[in-house]
Length: 222
Length: 222
DNA sequence: TCAGATGCTACACGCGTGTGTAGTCACTCG
DNA sequence: CGAGTGACTACACACGCGTGTAGCATCTGA
Image 1 (spheres, rainbow over the protein chains, first blue to last red):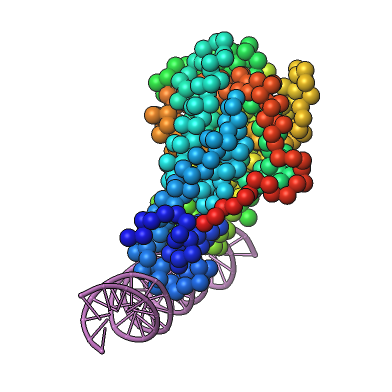
Image 2: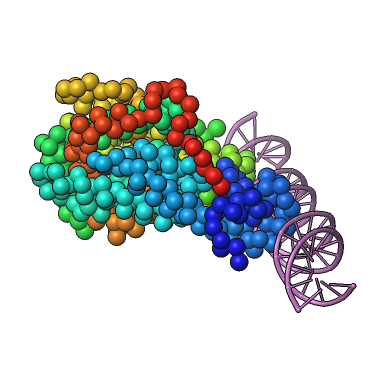
């Protein structure tokens, strides 16, 4: 039916409901959020929510789908606006979390929004490809693995927004906070926090070899 | 009453309930988890849960408190076992998430477990203090800010366990996965991913100065 | 021996929830 | 005009949930 575009349907009740749902799901979580509350925020009856989306879970699916669409749009914008020497991760993080920060956080932690994470891994891998080019020693682990970790790290501040904000003293997404964060991240990404010797030493202390049984799990007593 | 120790009460029904609660809260989330289900796992009646903890929320509080106790114990162990040249972050992450990975993840994302995060910031700051000593250029941002980001990053893989595992191809907490992760992290922490020039360039592209209004928030249209 | 805790269970209540149903209004098309 | 269709509402139902209450064993100490 209305598979049309993204803009023209934004004032429809359906879009308002979706928007309200992302707000409520993000703020209170899926379970705690109520269809009635969403309907109220959207200015419609609770029945209409069901009429348009069928069920609460289907509504969440629609939110997830919308998130992916929003991401791919943002992704294109970022790609054209990226710094020549590497993707501006701060910008990416700020953009990915957009108006939907809380919703995305919950979705990611609950294991959903896989497309978002995978896209971020892809971006991270591209970045690493450039970095690896100008590198003397060959990386020990695959680029994919490092990209996965990099993607997770890029999201970490957003996921732990409240805690980071508390430690920072200002909201991480406020102008002051994001500036502080950006500079902290630049510092982190531009300085090695382990010397090659330390890294080698720690590597040597790693649990035996892959495949060894749990060796560090002596007891979790209580 | 039974403020006794931590070990001697581990076989009591109260401890079993707490343990079952952390399992259920972690697996299904606080709202979706039911007192009846927790009671069944603990092998007791649902009434006993209320008898011991008063309410579902109080039960969660007890779980949080137990988590903090577990952390401080782990913290002591790690501190004595830490590598001389820096804290083994991989070990820390693996230890902090112990048997309570999922529970901790949810608690952190929901803004609880502040003590855990703050403790991690503290550890991170200690580590940075050592790193800063052997550093030529002075860091631009406070150690606290960098520690906050570092703590968030140390937790990121645990928070996004499912996604990272999917990108890795193996469970991030399996022996193979944690080994792979450790080596990826060591690579990340021991190599700068931005050259000083690139960092300077990106820093120059940062939004004006702290305190400037939103400049990058043109529109979030729909 | 007998009160009084204490650990624990069984059962019922009330409420909020997602969902189902019936119906109204408006607009379209033949 | 009139049937049809989709947006939308009001209302009721059934269910699962946290919570409350009453009661039963078991142990302890005066």
